[in-house]
Length: 360
Image (cartoon, rainbow, N blue to C red; front, side, top):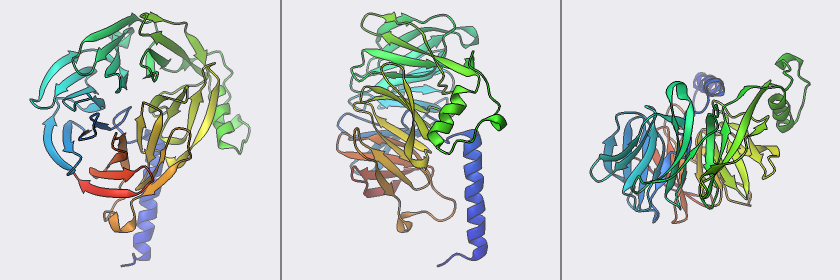
């Protein structure tokens, strides 16, 4: 049936309220990496909501197991066999969870917010901290055994906000939290009117009085490089995901404007394929990524144009809009998205919705 004028008005006002709230508070995503993890063969999928961990058989899209964590599950990654889940929780711990038994086989306490994974190399990188969140060391661990593979001392005062493995998993590059810098601060109401949103964002970042630092750590030699200063800051909802793509480092965020960092530390502000990135997911092997909003989104293959997808009206749920929560790329040639209604959505690389199934 057709909605009444009153219902349509209420829906428009609700959508506006959500947009305002998300602009102020940031993305609803709990994780800073992908919210969907898959085994190497694509047969096992894991996603989480709050403290609940869902283990899914991708062939049937049925939940095989539910495991409850003592704390909220944030960034996570499956080992190649789909047997061990590595994740950071909101208790500042890094955990290795054996899915078959529900037992924790490794715990690293007092870690920083920043964490990153290299699924092909089966590695995770965490930052150990002391009192008052002072970062001390970058620690690289095997996500299948928990064995420590490398430990590198970090410069005093350097606290990473985001970090990423390079494609070969031989280096980890980090960007620090923003801080007051020497750049001239221009109040927002005195900034020039710039129509191009990318140029506008660049001007704002260069004149907000804040800077951050970049640091690359070599895992093979176990040495940290020189700290480099940059005008780009990725605190809060900015830079929800940091990853390599085509030899460059990308920062994707809730807003449609992200940033690309070249090998020479040159920064370019880029515009994404959709307006709001409620859900984000990356294939770390080549930097392909997926973004999603309220029922729609796009897959962005490496070196190719975005491929858009949409949950059509017949597939939509009644009531409040359903947004994408996160994505994971399968080796079987599909992308899985998880929504705010905890529906699992299977999407072809051509943008066709193949299957939708609730898992809650």
